[in-house]
Length: 415
Image (cartoon, rainbow, N blue to C red; front, side, top):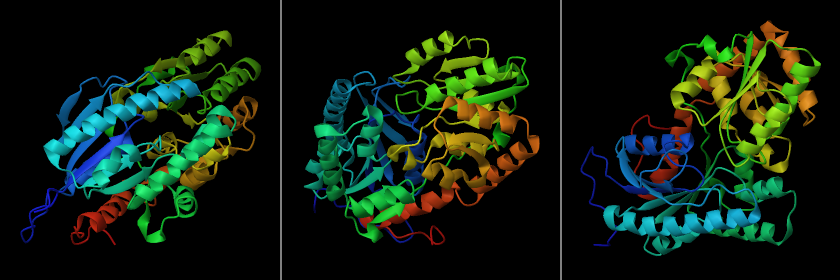
């Protein structure tokens, strides 16, 4: 028998097809999309193994969590420049290759699931592709646009990235896109067949009924405005700080508290900027927070805010924070991004100009209109519970897998 062949399924049983998930930029279970996918595959009967970096509080090299085997590799510190990215990706790729062979000898996976960025993980998948392993490419970010947004230019390295993207698409049997605009990239630049590209949207499983409000987070003020996410060069937290300064110092909204949760390569610089703008009393920046803290903050806040500026990269992104604000029934302010609007629809106020002053004006309008805030929050929550609910994405995920593993859907599993 072929070394990766499986025993035939007995009638009514589900075979334990092995799946290896590779993710480079976040550990699990912190990466909520990857963890939800892993749990959905586990629940469908797959034997799931994940390789990810050791970082952000997840330091164990190996552990089993909720029936999922996790291997973590060393990685350099999160990068801020081109040289730093090269070091980060080289260390990650080396760790992934070593751990992939370890996982192969232990688990004999039949499917390898690549989560970008970067689009270099095909190098770790190629040896196993030659052994008959099938490959799924899970496009979290369009990497060429991500590079251009971070560094403001193209140049030689941009075209190296485009080549890596093309090779990743060529290696993949199936592609998972986070939204329709990413799917169009897969069909055009990736040259994939429409039947091989499925949209698996990111959607939170949490609900606002699971936690309680904590008034202490408001610091004795009337309103709490919250942000959750990465603090990197392309995430626009600078705009949020500029908006806070305009709102508080120029417009006189001293009754507003900001809570900016998350960390990243720009965190220390942003902390210094907050202090230089004399915002310490009104802007809390606790860094990385626990899920309990995050969910309590989401329940307590009056308004969510996203600072991601308008560019080709952000237009393709489905932002987790946008969906999390909606899941908790919170109105939000964001710059007018293509996929941001596709996600939130009428649950957000859209700012056409990427500037802190324009964002402050939009925040002020919502703070003075409780009926609009209530309506946006209600519509967002309804949208998460219907159009964007996670189970729809699970159905698409299992549909993509069923064609590769030979497993059909259980009755009612997907349509």
